[in-house]
Amino acid sequence: TAYEISACLVGSEMCIRDRYGVNPTIKFLVSNSKANKMSWQTYVDTNLVGSGKVSKAAIIGHNGGTWATSSGFVVSQQEGLDLAAAFKDASNLRSKGAFINKEKHMVVLANDRSIYGKKEKGGFAAVKTTQAILIGTYVEPLTAGNCNNTVLEIVIMRSWLITVYLIEQGY
Image (tube, rainbow, N blue to C red):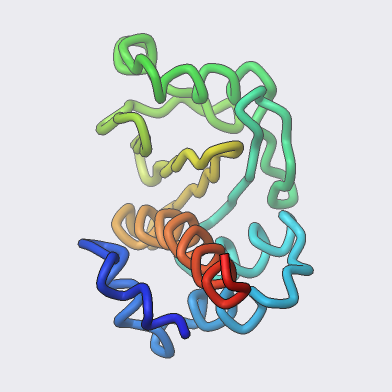
């Protein structure tokens, strides 16, 4: 079962696991994990924007190509490439800002897993996975914390669910 691996979960992963059944995003992910029929667009529409904590969202590849996006939200290939490069070296984004959907954001935090940006009444969270980058934006009255946590939860839960699936399959 899922709780057989709970001993190896740490920090935010354990907090997310312990909230199962409370967070509708996690409940949706868990209920749909075995079917594995979710499209990338479903993640954007249901898990990110549908959470009510993210205004617009996209999933892009490390090559800057778009996998799925909210209506009217465009992350150009160059914006995607710049963002992907910043996970290795964020100095360029820190000095010039990050452009998402043709809007400039001041980068407030950048590391090898997450990049967070802010502009007047909103901002973005970008989280890198092995092959993709999930991007969520927020505009007030939505908050940075809720947007950031929602994007990060999707990445952590999907990783956790894949682990659970492999354990259940005997791998």
